[in-house]
Amino acid sequence: MRDDGYSVGYMKPVNTNAVLQAGQPYDEDVVFIKQIFDLPEPLDVLAPVQLTPQRIQALLAGGDPAEFAERLRAAYRQVRAGHDLVLMEGASNLREGYVIDLAPPDLARIASEEGSDTKALAVIRYDDARSVDHFLARKSV
Image (cartoon, rainbow, N blue to C red; front, side, top):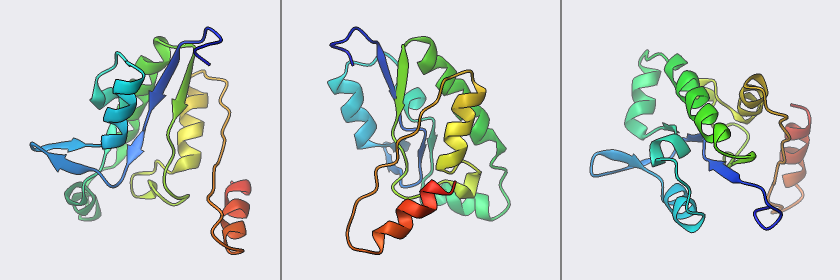
């Protein structure tokens, strides 16, 4: 896409497996992509919602997940403003993110609400015949 003249942005909107490094959530995928593609946005914008096990426990104990959607919207607007298109890295499964009301279908909806002509591509690894259920579940959303 870059070779065709497009400015391409990237985000990993929700990470439910974030680890702490120096007291801050850290995602090596995001660090790698930022470096390889020389992206100008800071890591907390490229990965706006990083859930550690501690944050998930706090949510289950009665925390409010609403702040995460607004953080995601603000980060998306920032990345989108600087690029022709934005690639968003999806979840590792179709259920990831429900704890904060930001499951994969919600991410596409938010991007659409922010004025983007959103297209979604689901890539599902084929392990065996049961993998078809994952595909059909995604197709029905």
